[in-house]
Image (cartoon, rainbow, N blue to C red; front, side, top):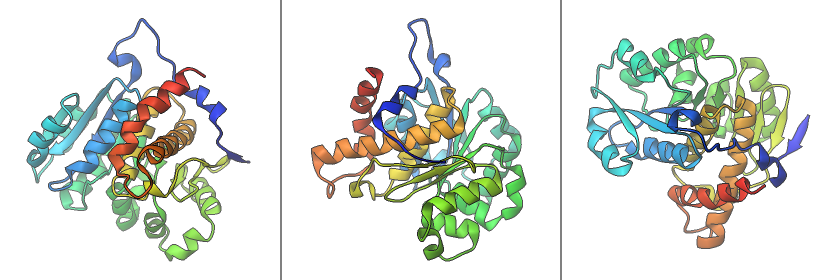
Length: 284
């Protein structure tokens, strides 16, 4: 069944309760941000916080420790050596997490491959796979059996083409159909990004109707990963979290465009617009 997301469905946003603490609203672990790419992890982590989760940890190389501490002091840092992360360290760092955003700015080094491999094999919580997490899966398809059922993938058309080993044109020719069939074949929720993003779990299909061309900017996808991971950490079922996350992401982009224009937008403007979008949702 195909649906188009509309504003009234924002009432699925997880509710806040007065008697609560940070643990009530879930814990997101962001695994990404290699040396020179800290921005991707930062955007995902800040977006997760702005969407309401209680605690965000960033798993990062030592080279990015000071950068993250200055950019986002609210985050908990789990630091590994620039090369040579260990499996037991990763399992300990992920313990207690409610959701994982795996891949933003992670790179494709041997260290990155090991982090993806260990996270997939040991995770007992939902995973949002994006960016280099997907690129590593495309290069190492033997990892697919380790991807937990119901995980959320967020490819753009070029990343989906790599996963399918097909031309990008074959993906863009049928965005909804590609998302539906890939989700059904792999047991995942597929968020196939486009000017009208398609979300499918293999049975249900949503075509998003929010967003604009100003969101075609570096880091926008990292923001989306953080939003979806946050909603999942707060207890939403993965498909519903993906649908609401895509819609909120687009609404925040629309609000940023109304204020700044589509030419001038950058990814952090989407995060800055999230509070007012979510405040409106709280009143529904």
